[in-house]
Length: 306
Image (cartoon, rainbow, N blue to C red; front, top):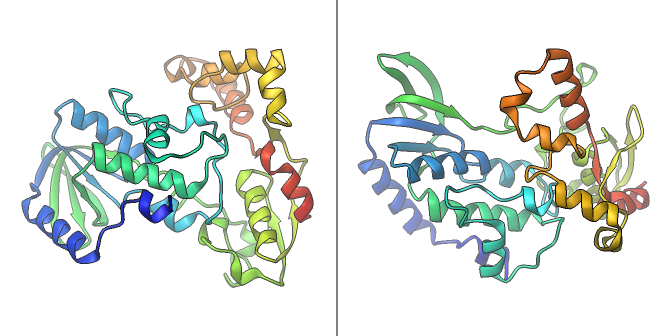
């Protein structure tokens, strides 16, 4: 099944009519406004809708994933940590894969994950406003959201769920270098223009490793430059995952969020406890759990690309 089929692409005229009708009928006030329609924004909206709370969601469904992540990328997160949450746990990645005939693989292709997000949105958040929020102002009993077309919406509460948008880091040394020569990985959805070029990838996290692999596949000569060795996550092969008792025990005890090494991942899943810890200990947990690392599945490809 193609990605286009998975995403349920509709003719543009119909989509335009539906959006116009939604705008005409949309209320100018709501209890909660959610800004962002990626996995977190959709999950929050799904829970609010299920609770009967008047909610409006602004953003393009999976927009950052579609416009700022390269085609061919695969998820680093484990399958169990890649579900988009709904209150009844009915719209899981398992359900999506089963109904669309997709294989259960740990390194899920980004194209399929984007399609999963679109499917989740249609099921749980059908009324999505794709217009951009220009600014948020304090208002009586809440906030005033000013949209790009000049319309305003009043919300008692606002949830910001913009994910990694506008969070990219560019070293100061590259501030005056043209983007044609120095760019951030989030600026590319296709590396074809680098064919035949020598490219240095600076970093040692999943984004760097994945970009190096995709650049090499696009025909570039690639070298990764980093301040330390790359930390690889996961077993060397699936046989270890299936038969090594230590790995089996580790996976049985691992948290659903899968953030951080075992057993810190269990603690990361309990933010109510973490916030009570001394700041120095919280910082250590953050550094240890969120440090740059690459999925072991890309290790062979990275070695080959280098």
